[in-house]
Amino acid sequence: VTEPGEGAARKPYTTDALVDVAVRVFLERGYHAASIGEIARAAELGKSSLYHHVSGKEELLERGLRRAFDALFAMLDEHGATTGTAVQRLRYGLRRTVEITAQMVPEVSLLLRVRGTSPTEQWAMERRRQFTRLMTELVAAAQDEAGVRADLDPALVTRLVFGMTNSVTDWYRDDRPESVSDLVNAIERIVFDGLAHA
Amino acid sequence: VTEPGEGAARKPYTTDALVDVAVRVFLERGYHAASIGEIARAAELGKSSLYHHVSGKEELLERGLRRAFDALFAMLDEHGATTGTAVQRLRYGLRRTVEITAQMVPEVSLLLRVRGTSPTEQWAMERRRQFTRLMTELVAAAQDEAGVRADLDPALVTRLVFGMTNSVTDWYRDDRPESVSDLVNAIERIVFDGLAHA
Image 1 (cartoon, rainbow over the protein chains, first blue to last red):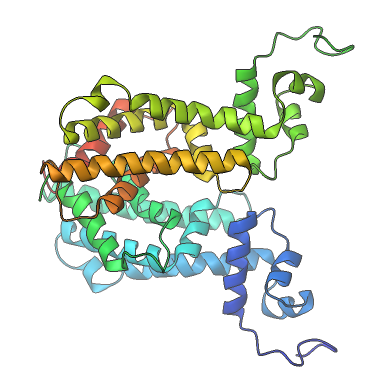
Image 2 (image 1 turned 45 degrees about the vertical axis):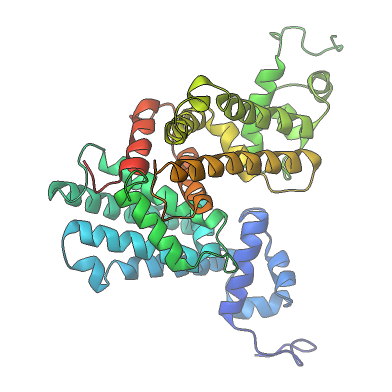
């Protein structure tokens, strides 16, 4: 569908590219403050072209968040997350969460900031709680098999450990000297072995 | 100073109480989006009464941030932070940072969100970098004395460990079942001893 006087000389715009722009605008301006007009301008698209791709701001939020949630929940079905002892599965889950976070900094940042009452925000908060619950169960299972220390509340351990992985979104960028595997390595060593051990 | 028709039946308003309100409004709305009018309304003060206390929005930001920075930098002069081995001073600095963070969740949250270009925001970002540098030096000194593992970059260790303490602001509230000392304990054990040790 082409509109008169618009898009004739433009390269085709993908919905994915539009989601990239929307995620950036949401992070800069805040989801609630950002308008569909700002997103269209940032994407250099007319508003009506934008509406060929998505139904509106909430769909853009949902598509942005879905990237991160799809990656995180798909990870839970991977071989490393479903086989072995609980502590092996926990180590795998932690490493892959760090990888996904470092590879999807904008999407994970957006996910961490969701607070509101729209259906998409409610859905996102529920997905986030679900991920935390699954990780808490894994920590508890690892404690039961004596794979990790049992003197700390599993829900507290989960909050703190994934608080560390979440904090990566505050500073990690592609141009950092640390590679993703340096980051995975450092977090796994600190969390499992601790700074006091070599 | 009393204005006609205002404040006659009001209890005296302190600048500290006004800063409490401003910090809350900044967190809810974003510092840049928040207006002095909104802060005045949230404080149930007339705008001109507000200006008896502070010169404007930037002073409110500075006063809010100063609470957190004053506590963090004062901590660095405490006995525990200035005596003993580097690893003892690092453990002390970590424990006290967790305490200050848990006791000043709104102020530390605000500090973590500062991004802009106003003089106060620039000052806050520089103070934050300075704190991070001092902690990085302490991690490096602890590595030199073989008090902590030396196979990880001290700047990366500092970002990750203080990323964990910062993440406390996302969920810790006074009404949580975990006390501040539970939190301090859990973070110190995870960071120094690791989950794999008991």
